[in-house]
Image (cartoon, rainbow, N blue to C red):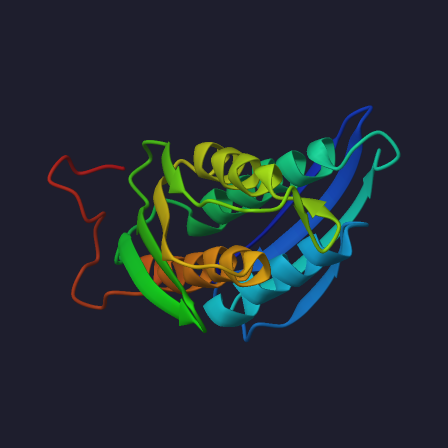
Length: 196
C-alpha cells in the first residue's frame, strides 16, 4: 500500500483548522482544539486506531464550541477520505464492540462512498468535561458525510457520561482501523460495482 497520509485545512470566519492524519501510524498525537475534553476524545480515537494525528485549531470558542467541533469533523472526514485514495485493497468494512467499565459501545463502518450516520447515545448531562454532549453527534455526522462513510455508532449500555463519550471515540478508532487495513488478496476496490 502507498503511504496513506493526508493533510487538510479549513479557514472560515469561525474556525481555522490544520489537520494531518497517517492511517498507518503508531497512535502518536499532537492535538490542540481549544477544548480539552475534545482533545482527549480525539487522542483516544487516534491511539486506539493507531493513527498519527495532528490537529491545530483556532475557533470562535467565546461564541460556542459548535463551530470548532463540527468543523474538525468535516476536516477529519476529508483527510481520511483523501488518505484512502482510490480505496483499492482495503477491507472496506470494520466494526468493533468496545467495553469500557459499565459502558458497551458498538461501531460499524462501511467506507462505501455513500455517507450515512446512524447514532444512538443517551447522555444524562448537558456537558461532560466542559463540552456539550449534543456535539458528539454533530461531530460524527460531519465526519461521516465529509468522509463519505456509512457509520453506525450505538451505546448498548452505559451510565457514566465520560465513559459513554470515550467509548464512542475508541470504538470508532478501532472500527476504522479494521476498515482501512490492507487486504493482500484484494488488489481492486472491494465492490461488485467496481468502484466506491
